[in-house]
Image (cartoon, rainbow, N blue to C red; front, side):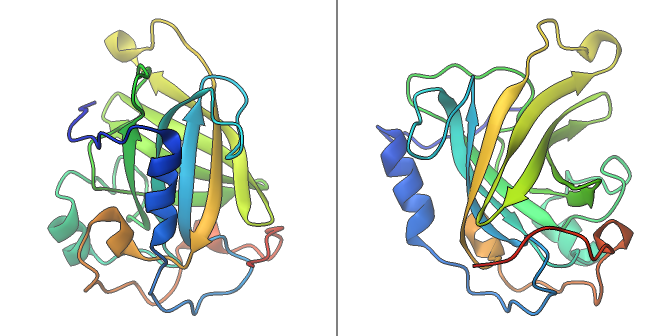
Length: 209
């Protein structure tokens, strides 16, 4: 898992303010019970909220699109994305940064901008935040109002199995409509005409605000 460019913000507050200062501009024409949108994110070593950030070690944003990208756009925007490994086309992007003075752990990726995939299963939203053929990082979140909160963990097979397994606290706060430009990616994209099967559920307990 590669760690690449990182912002040098001096405080968590600055990082979150920059993410919140831009609002999405994409059309928001999907069913209103799906949690697509632009989200600020914190990954923490222990409990945290956007008011209590002391345990946070990674911050940034995640953009969850209402429908998947087409193949041509996936190849153009992120040649490293694998629909085979992620079990479906990309429908999200993220950019994560190691916070000043904090130490990274696990496989969560700070190589950005990066395409990824979110799904809804069994009352939870799952977002992949790193993936290779033998390892990855998955956040499993529960929707509540304008936030998603839950846990994140690394996994690996064989020599990639984490030597010190741990579970992180992950919290996302919706800041606007789904805008792939917030990942520093081109906005001239084409979404597939309908969601893929993991979206097709009327029971998602989420209402946009």
